Amino acid sequence: MKSFLPGIILLISSINSLAQNTFPLTGNAGIGTGSTTPLAPLHIMGYDWDKIMIQELATTSLGRITFSNSGNTLYLGTVGSGVSANGHVKPNASFFTYDGSAGMHFAAVNANANIRFYTGGGADANERLRIDGTGKFYGLAFSRVTTLRDSIVSMDPSTKELQVSPLRPSRMRFLDTRAVATSPANYNTSLQVQLKNNSTVNLASEGSGLSSVIGLRGGSADNTGKSHELAFSDNNQVWIRSGFNAAWGGWKKMVLDSAGIVRLGTTANRAALHVNGDVFTRKVKVTQSNWPDFVFSSTYRLPSLYEVESYIMQYHHLPEVPSAAEVEKDGLDLGNNQAVLLRKIEELTLYSIQQQKQIDAIQEQNKKLTQLLEAMLTKEAGKSNN
Image (spheres, rainbow, N blue to C red):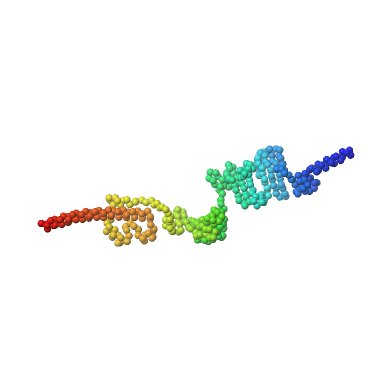
């Protein structure tokens, strides 16, 4: 018996020397901590993947870890197919649910860290959502599923319309910054929509004195081009301006009213398109009826040049041609004016033909008179010789 007791003591000592677990009667407990003092009520150390495994043997029930304090509870677990959809418990799913009023907080505390979400596998191709270290949000795709009960944001694949559940088009929320002036640098690499006092953005006061302003710049500095602002004020006025960081350029105005009248640089309503300024273009086409080919008709009465002279002496412009006062008052109808000018050219052509015929007749008459004179002179010369 005396020889057996030392062997038992030696065996116990060897077991204690190989063990990595610490289970004191009070204080912290350690699993795999070895000589390290446990730093928490349960401290687990190791080099493999699974440190804690809680396995639910049934396939239709609930396996759950609960973290609870006096006020809130955090649930982490998996659900079998036999558990009904209720709250955070959805069949054939895992869940992470917190019932506190402050919601859940996910933090990647390293400055360069991302928060990533995967479905269908852990490969890079299965990454679906990411929030990077600068706060940028990346989504692979938004798509609408058949049942929208669990959808927050979706896109109708037929209309490409972004929607929020249930089937309502999303809205861009405008910023009411009416008293804050803007500079071109405000729009670097962004698109912004704001409500502004007209006086704040140097627009004339119209109606309510407010304008909805859209600003954008594709790049981040002057070397990427100017920033641009588009302002919609009352009375159907649309304004646009551009500028580099130093300053905005002047506003350019366009007005489109309910009747489809477009006015550029003016508020006057004189035509379907009214431009107060120069128009540069490579080509203008004007449709015109009653083109003056009728001038060459055999029934057309060509006024005599004496009649034209009498009209000019009285009115100081050609017949059918608008006067200087009329053009200054009402402008010039390019289509009608071209038709009138062509008519005058055609009349001049007829006058020229008439005059050419008269010239030809005079030349023929002169030729005959010359021949007659030469014959007479020849005859007189013969008499003198006799």
